[in-house]
Length: 366
Length: 59
Image 1 (cartoon, each protein chain N blue to C red):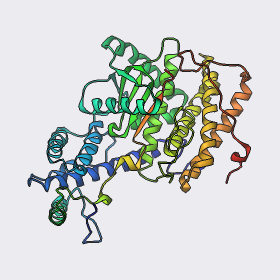
Image 2 (cartoon, one colour):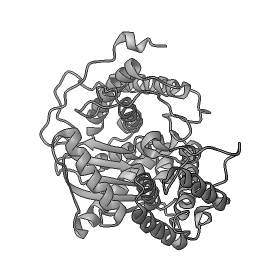
Image 3 (cartoon, rainbow over the protein chains, first blue to last red):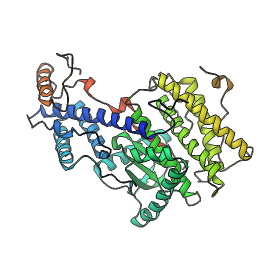
Image 4 (cartoon, rainbow over the protein chains, first blue to last red):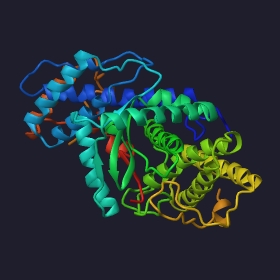
């Protein structure tokens, strides 16, 4: 596969940086524009120059993305007071410094009550109820639980670093904050309105917590990367009102959701393919890989059938197929018994139900 | 909602905020809208990305 591709399912430090800087530039340009529009009212001083920031390896505050969206929505609603309040906060954040201090380990703690965290939690609960017909619970964890889980999260990051170093470089380039929660229905949340932060539910006691976190960090970081990459190329052109079967969720989703799910699964499969071959500590890796590969194939099937892809999107689909073929070989070589029934890797007493294999007709697409 | 461009190169949002502000005031005077925006200058994450990802936890 062409590793010089600007956007790829195979992570790299250079591609991460390209996508991140492009995404930052788009959001900051838009924020500067909105500030100028907002300052036209009540003739307030124009602070658009404050959000001009040189290229830097350090990350932007996740709160800025929330403020950008809040300002846009308030302006579209012609809500003068909300616009002025938001501009005050933007000014405060910009003057305090929009960049985070560089740290090799993300900040790991419980979800808190900052404006942007409250917004994302509330929005996720409402969306979860709409999607899954069950209202998710998303609640803070105690300091003791957060401290205990932090050690396991760091061990998961080290696992990614050792067995999928290119993915770890992407994690380092994109992930700045992890917020832990306890609850039900949903397990992992990313939202571009808090870009750089992810929410992860603490694992059930019966699952391997290190593998659980390794999977979720890879999953959510890959969403971040793909969202940033979509600021360079739209990748797919489907109307969002068309719904398809998701490889990872029970509810029908627009193709962008199916494509995202397939993309993140292709990353997880790469991680567990490596663990399955090189990390002898746990036999769970084969069970994980088998289940993730099944989900990847289901996603490939749906993308190949329904996606209207740009040339970059077509390249990504070919990469997904290459990743699935490689993992198939690893599973076959390991002697893993695929005829047995396995419990779902996320616990909760659910059996894993394999999807149908990739249609041969679909495999032969152009 | 779009305002008309009166120049081929749009103003740089970082350094030409006053140019943008004047255009907004003048466009708003015609339409009665306070915040008259040019959609080409906006990066709307709801349209350009999958804004929210929510994984399903099977309980």
